[in-house]
Length: 316
Image (cartoon, rainbow, N blue to C red; front, side):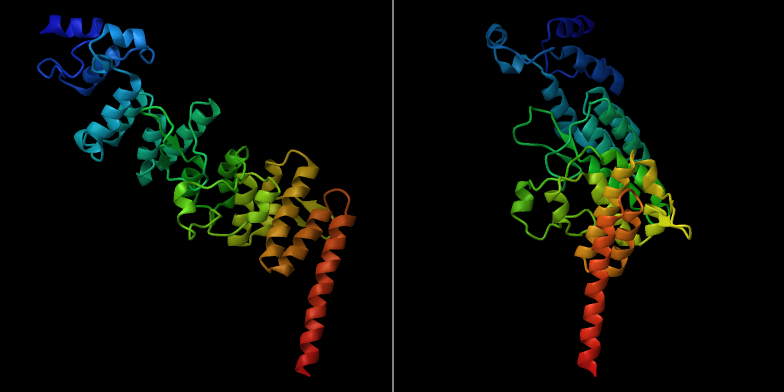
């Protein structure tokens, strides 16, 4: 039986045989299966030399075997999540492995940090749609391929501390600064008009028109949600000098800082929170040339005063 196992590895045959009389643990099983995987997708000549495609074993077939055919139940994944995570990682299923690990509250932080490292190494596949499920597969992807919605993963992780520690949340949001906001929708979104356009169920379509990224959207939505404007964006002191906010760590220039504050102000104005918008435009005016933002603030103040005067006249 050992000779047969050796021949099946060298000759890449007996692919459906599990050799259960020899294999005693998962590591041995994985080693044998990985040894039987061909290095490249089989060409027509290779297939012709075999009896059929069943005589070849690709990485995609191995990934499908472990993730779909056997799956979580076979490997008792919920009792030993790190074992199943290791199995998926050793077979280059990083997206599925991270998605599985993120389902455990106590392991989610590790899933996020592993995902960020793999993203930095360009080893992570991301979906084309911002509101895709955590782990998704495109119809045109090769066998075994899956994609991880990094934005959804980070949102899922930061929800527990974004109000108590918004500065910490911003550090994770900044990792999304190279992901643009797009109007492209998945088939599920096209068939379901109730799916929100914002990560916090907030409609921010004008950010898409401006070509903004997910970091900017997250800052806007966090500011709308917790109203900690001085902490997030800074404030102007009594001497008219702006005190830094949490965003200063991520804005490399005065102009980028001003543009971000102005964008948040636009969002507040578009949602009818004019008083906060005026405050933010004045804050933006402290970064560089103050004239444009001061003019916007004055215009909004006149609008508010006009509505107050009209209301008081009607009341009298």
